[in-house]
Length: 110
Image 1 (spheres, rainbow, N blue to C red):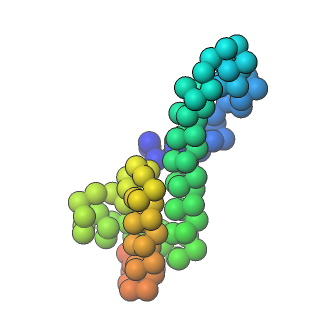
Image 2: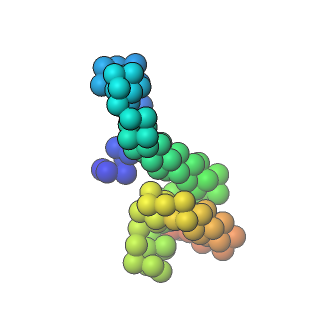
């Protein structure tokens, strides 16, 4: 559920023009870095999530295929994507390896 909410966070998040958003708080005298850095971190995380799903889909993988990564590492692949740029790079590398290897869980069900 948390991953689903993060995936749609950008659409659900209020726009900057609404009262209390970073731009309005800065206009009211708040520190720019304090107000906009958390937004930057959130946006980076959201774009990693979005692009990860595009890459997985382009490679022909589904969420059912991510279980192989969990089996190998003991960690969900999606957690790695969300936590850092290194995790995102690792996920893209894993997607490429899985695409080349074939035999994914989603293909076996068909």
